[in-house]
Length: 417
Image (cartoon, rainbow, N blue to C red; front, side, top):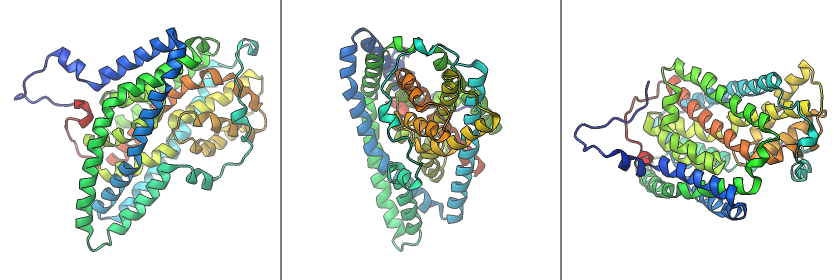
């Protein structure tokens, strides 16, 4: 399947220049380049641009709750089959666990093959890791995880309301009101997305201005390994899964290119959560599957974070010449299968989870995290992008497996912006 946007023969052809300058992708890309240049040549001004990225993400977060709630409630109430809701949920969680475990294993394997930690520690710059190591000894708590995860809270409330709505006498009238409200919310999102270039510019200018491109040199091998591993995971693992359903991974990536660039600029996969839900529904995935899989995936299907965590553990073990037995490697994967679920796609959360994992392992010095502080921000882009792609693929796969995927050829709402 090739996901394309057909052009009607009746519509007048637009000039190439007009197509470029009216495309959101073009302006986000220009903004990212401008942010890199400002941050590199004027670091002080680049750091000041943090407010632009932060405000844009804060604005996007306003839409996350209503969109998740409305999508799930309307999806479940329109499905009419509560058994199907449970089946989709179980199927999604099973898929998440298998794929994220594969991601963990790939991270370990590549780290052992390329040995990015076999370098001189004296050449590395130490950062202050006390903010992450102070509370690292605390045990992982599912209750605390739920209470601190707004997406999961909205997900649970929406599922309960969606099920209850099926038994409500005025169900159809309520659905009509919710659909109207949903249209207003998505229209608001459309206009907010016009600000995406500003958010991407601010996020990238701040990252380069504060951390500097020169920080990449000492840990360049680790950076290359992380990006290479995530590319292999996306094109080989996720690509093979999609190929089974006769869909090309490149077609999917082209389809969500605006979201990928937005995540690259802001370093947060949350920035693209509302718009990716819109895109997937327009692609042909059912509202119920999108509503259940995407919000759950943002907490339980963080493939990029899984790769980063496993590679970082092995990197630090190599850096300190700590030998890990095969059983200990399996233990690392087992621990990360639990702790990685606490990284909810927010910038920097993967680093906090890494501190908790090292503490639970009781073998690799937690202080070694200080060596990663300089490049962690640059690796967060790779994590967030891979997380986004992983959840996109998961939604398509679950929708396909449920035979709830309509072969649509629609002009994406956000494509026209």
